[in-house]
Image (cartoon, rainbow, N blue to C red; front, side, top):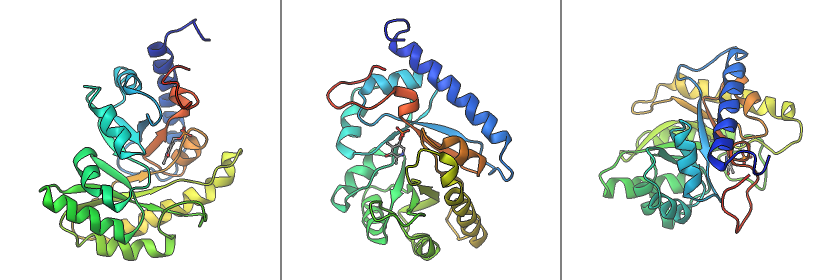
Length: 244
Ligand SMILES: *Cc1c(COP(=O)(O)O)cnc(C)c1O
């Protein structure tokens, strides 16, 4: 393919294909959420041209996993996109994260929620967040334990600087995405419980799950935010920006 189509065209083709796959998976979903599925283009380890190319293909949401990288990238693109933080955040970067991101998906501890609340209050912002759940209890992953999530949600709901908008998870990496379906089902159940609590100030709208390898299974199980990097931009290579 290299040389046959240019960078922008190949990204647009990939996005078109993924959107079609999402649509098909959505039709197989037994209990879809109110909010239709949206695609987040994960631009981490790619340059600002990746943001521009995704935006040109109609994507309106981008995901980044580092504060500094997002800050640099944001200053090099004028694309009209919303920026989502999807990587672990240290509390000492809470202030910067609040000033940069429209949605912080990776709130993985009460401690971090408190730090973000403080930063948001100081900036007169109500920061939209998701709680990240380590649904498979993986030692190597950040996130709340499923059994602690609703308690943390109750406490977060009382923080004036934050607006809890739903849940996020990263499923274990497996070759066969079918194997992670039970985790997505568990997340959908937890999301339903959170919604049923009807906590004041909580806008339980987004269930963020699914990446290149497993987004179709995630959508079948009710995800309405999917985070795709490799499927759009190709493998991430350090030092070489962009290109497929
Ligand atoms: C990198 C990353 C993604 C995208 O992963 P791909 O497999 O490249 O699609 C999605 N979510 C999170 C949290 C990530 O860190």
